Length: 294
Image 1 (tube, rainbow, N blue to C red):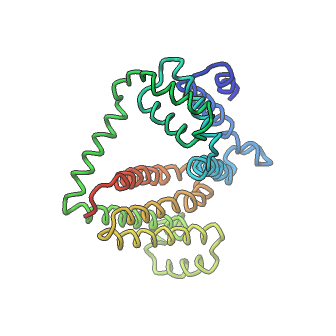
Image 2: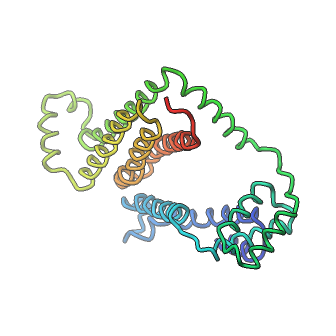
Image 3: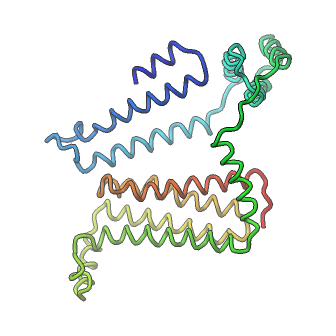
C-alpha cells in the first residue's frame, strides 16, 4: 500500500494509476488476509466469522465505489477540474480520440462563460489526438461477444435456454442451502431412514438466525428469478434486471451467511454467482444500447 501511495505522489500518468491500483490491491489483500488473527482471542486463523468479515468488507468497498460512480453529482467546477486533469495526457502525447471526446464532454458540463473553459476547449479542438493503439484482446473479445449476442437472441431457443439456466441455478443453489442446513453431517444411513422427517422438523423449529436468514434470502432471490421469467417475453431488459437483482441478493446476502458457516468453501458458490452476474450485466448493457426487443 505504501508503494501505491508513492507511485501516485511521484508520477503523473493515467497508466501509472493502474500500477498503483495493483500494488495497493496486493497490500490491502495481504492485510485483510490476517483478519482471523485480529478478531479471535486464541490466535486461531480459521476463527469462524473471519472469512465472513473479510467478505462483508469487500461488499462495503464495492458498494461505496458503485455509489460514487453512479450516484455522485458533480458540480460545474468539478467537471472543469476533471477536464484540466486530462490535459496531463495531452502533454504526454497520450490523449486519444475517445479521451478527447470525454474531456470535451466535461467542459460542456462546466460553466461555458468561464475563460478557462473556453481556452481549454479551444486547445483541445485544435490539437490532434494521439493515434489509438490497436484494439487489444479484451476489446476484440467484447466486440465478438456483442456480435454473437445479437445473433443468438434471434434464435427461438434463446428464451427457453435463459429460463432453463436460471431455474437450474436456482434449484441447485437452493438445494445446497437446504442440504447445509438440514442434512449436512447426517450420513446416508440417517438420510434414507424415515426418522429423517422428525430430524427436519426438529431442525426447523430450532433453526438459528444464520440459517433462517440464509433461507429467507434464498427465497427472495428465487422470487426475482420467477419475476424475471414472467417479464422475459415482454421485455428482455426488464427480465434481465430482475435476474440481476436475484443474483445480487445471493451475492450480498446469502453468500455472507454461507461464508460464515462454510468459510473458504463458499468461494465455489461465489464464483458461480459472479460468473452469472458478469453475463447478465453484459446482456443488460447490450439491451440498453438499443438491441431490438422480440
